[in-house]
Length: 329
Image (cartoon, rainbow, N blue to C red; front, side, top):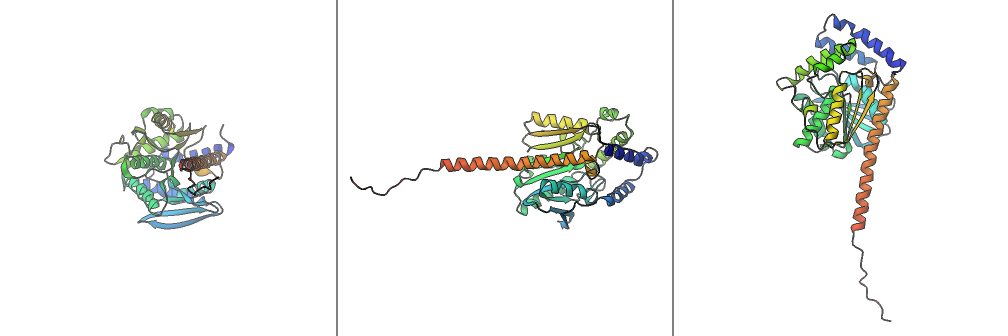
């Protein structure tokens, strides 16, 4: 059963979104409201923030103290490909970086409808390649994102696998949006819940704005419709009360059948974007701790594999032969 803190959050969000059922606000108004709501979020204590321009794109380095500077989390924020920014997700990225003990790079990729597909994917590829040019090795990078950012994370993996570059060590999807088609059956499942029903109607429209001239079934738009072989280990988190729940389960099952190591963690009764409220919702803190455990497992597996390789190389070296002449008896 969800915590009392989550129940209060859900009541607040339901009240805040009630006007949407009577009058649909403009996209500009929704963006502004989300930015204003983010003013109450703060970076965790002990996390340093550096804002800069990454080849013309706004970006932020998030550096906890202490952290391993050799490893980095590339974070892609959510928002249905039309909302969200560095401001709206700064606190979440800081909390993740701090728990994982690694640097994080967050980018403000271009959003629809002004910049439809493949603009966001191109920006994600740009940031990933920039990290490689900075000296980060692919196996020292983990890519993560929530909601649409989670879908973008998976699309980035597909693009890299199919020739755009080397794959990262792993990827994390927090309630990832994997199917922009959003089947009618999904909407029917949440029709009794006003908050989720409004979300379903909204993101169905946003999906079309993001896809632009591309079909919604394009694999780099809806990753669940792609061939999912040869991907790195994945962590997927979702709640059974979310609109995207069915699609996440479908993606996880399909990826496992393709031989991809998938860690699927499900939560009960939580609203979409519950991770953003990690300061007040205990389930969010639990989820972030599980993300940290996953990343630590990735690094531990790498170190174990490196030890095996070193041991194999040492045992393969030929024994030194003593060629010195021996004294006659």
